[in-house]
Image (cartoon, rainbow, N blue to C red):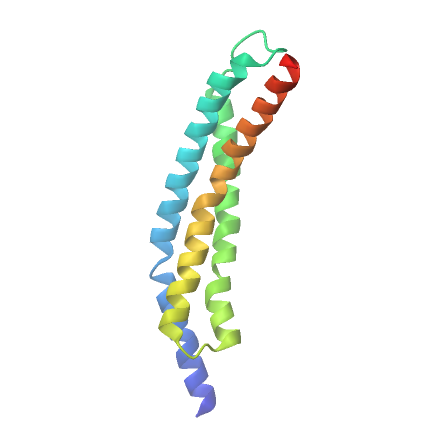
Length: 136
């Protein structure tokens, strides 16, 4: 009886998490495109101010393709991490299952959406640091 209950709860957890995976992936794709656009804007604007630059950096089809493939690999890794939701639920057996699911999904969702923006933020900080070193 306990074994049947546990397998039913695991199946229910899996269905709940899988029902939200498409929304998660759409948000990841949107965040990736937005972060890429921010990085390109930073390179085009601040990159031109670097003292050792003689020309503006180019964004070619090749660089977009390579970055796109790299981001698809990152999205695959994020989807593997997404499995931590149902796995943690199966291991921890929270008392308030619905509350736990909402909190963990929200936490994972917003961290995953925010993470791609670390690249343009670090890029801007690095370029600004390099510009400040050259003017000092």
